[in-house]
Length: 245
Ligand SMILES: [Zn+2]
Image (cartoon, rainbow, N blue to C red; front, side, top):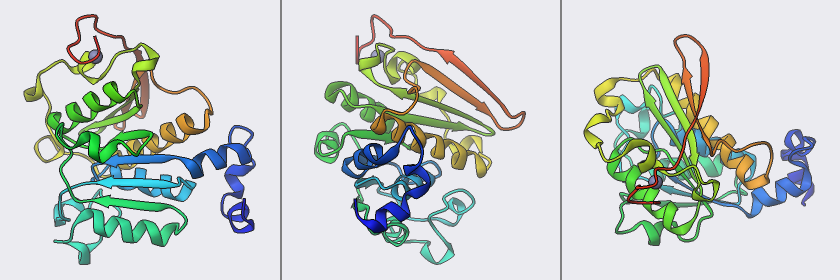
């Protein structure tokens, strides 16, 4: 490890759960973030800062003024620009050692394998059933962890879908009812909430890569920001699931 890296990562290198071995695992890790909105922005920042070797970014959108209250990689001057381009620039400014591979495409079942095959782990930072279902199907087939978060007003949900855990997949939890899911523009969201949940996704990714702690792959965590409560529920596999059953 270079002297500059020892200094840069010193506060996490002293952690017994990370150490030099964990930091080297992070530097070899390849993480794909799908969706660079409220969840993807803080997740990308913390993963880049932590020293992830390769960070893939997938998002087809451009920055809009209504994004700025929660999508903290972007500023007023970035409105109209592609999110992946602005994000790549900001992340390289934050940590030039982290390789960023930006892709301005919409993640789908058609391009999933092409976009994700070079990565070990995916973060689902999207906000719609179609994209989430495509990420889930790919991760089940490729046996890769899908670090998932979702938002509803003041409430966030977090889990890690990993078929190896035996606790099922996104479809086991949600079934096939996309109409039941509202996105932030329909339901509304407090801007801090995706910051909290995206940071939690980054933490689960770091734990998964380094082996630190217990991965949230058998439970669903519900964070209620209005009352500052956190609840965890055990989740299970549906024997008749069309994706992982
Ligand atoms: Zn399933």
